[in-house]
Image (cartoon, rainbow, N blue to C red; front, side):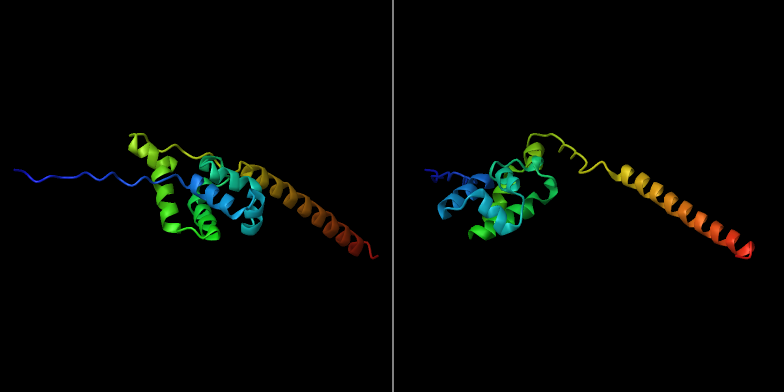
Length: 143
């Protein structure tokens, strides 16, 4: 007779948000206390616990945020990040055969800053020009 093969179920890897939230609550900490300890905005903790990485100001740093949060709580960082790698939007999109979506630009103030700096430079140049012109006129008139 043939050998019996037993199929072992694959380990269930939870999304990191649930792990982080449960560990935080087990310590009796509020999201504000975690944010204070990590020097983050309080909203960041809530977004991580809901696995809403695309809502972070810089979604590319989500993995680092999760690692820091796991270390603070004394969790195994590697295990928590394995959950992130399985549940991150890019991984889910790739497994569904979709291309990862493009991230929105972080800020759209680049053109405004350049224009503002150009106007400031022109104002400074104009002020300098009037001062130099006034000094030259004053010097030529013998005064």
